[in-house]
Each structure stands twice: as C-alpha cells, then as structure tokens.
Image (cartoon, rainbow, N blue to C red; front, side):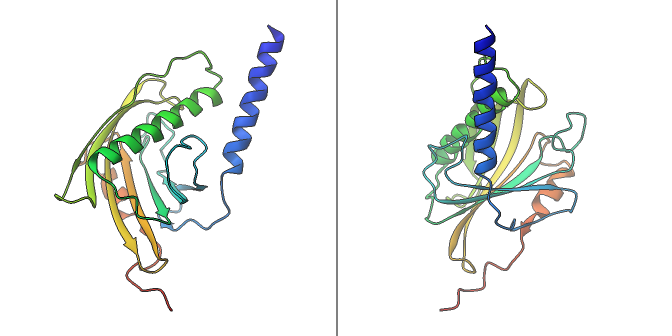
Length: 203
C-alpha cells in the first residue's frame, strides 16, 4: 500500500512538472485588468495533446476565477495564436472544446489526488453566431475538478480572425457560468489583444 501511495505522489509530481514546463516566457498579449492572473502555454497542450495545432495559448483569469462564492467564478478569457488556419466549424469547435475540458479536468483530478474519481462526461453544444465560421456561441457542461467538485455549465463565445500584425490566426474564447446578460460579460468582452492586428507585417 505504501508503494502505491508513493507511486501516486511520484506520478503527480511528474505531471505538475510537465504542466509547469509547458508554460512559456512569452509576454501575454491579452490586455486585461491588472488583478487578472495570466498564463501562457505552448502547443501541444499537456492536458490536450491531441489538439492538432502549433502556437500558443494566452490566458487571463478574472480575479474571482477560483472562488466558488464569487460572481467571477470560472470566468476567464483565452486566445489561441496559431501558425495555421484552424478551419473551425461548429462540429470542430465542439470536438476541440470537449477534448480541451475533458483533458483539463482529468488533470485537475490528478493534481487534487482524486485518482479513483470517474470523470463525468463533458457535454458541448455550439452554434454559428453569424452564419459563418468566424463566430460561435455555445455552452460547455463539465465537471469542475479544481474548485466546486461538481458539474457546472459554462456559457461561451468563440471568435476567429487573422492578425496581420503577427501573421497568425487568432481564436478568442470567453467563458463564464453566468448568463450572457450578466455584468461579467462586459469585462470578458473588454479583454483584447494589446496591439492592432489590422497593421500589416513589414516586408
């Protein structure tokens, strides 16, 4: 039994190390309130390695993100800065978000030493918000393995664009359990890239 416990602790330490090693020293490109924690990850994401992208993920967490009693609980913004066009469709957004959050919450279970907890199934539903493949609106029902330890429903928006300034594809994700009419969504929508993507690359 002691050997099993030591093995579990050892594997957890390796996973945590991997997560830390996947962070990058790149400056976060997202402009948000100074109280919002930030992080930059590099693809392939350690918790969702099957996502077939090359680039980085830049994240800004609302101040109350990890507080289950806060109006800002689990509200955050992340952006994928990708080398190639992700060619997103409704089905692809659903598939990617299922892979992303299932993997993230499996990691959450391990970090919290809940090795024998069976992760409830993640359920994702999105629709095209503009009749094109550049804007999507939807929801993600998932198990919060980090904080609440129960199923939650995240409302989400996804937008896709091309950034001339850096010559890369940008995918914005904004998420919160709160209804789209809640005040937190103004804060989420105010988070933007720090530079003007309409400026073209100098040749």
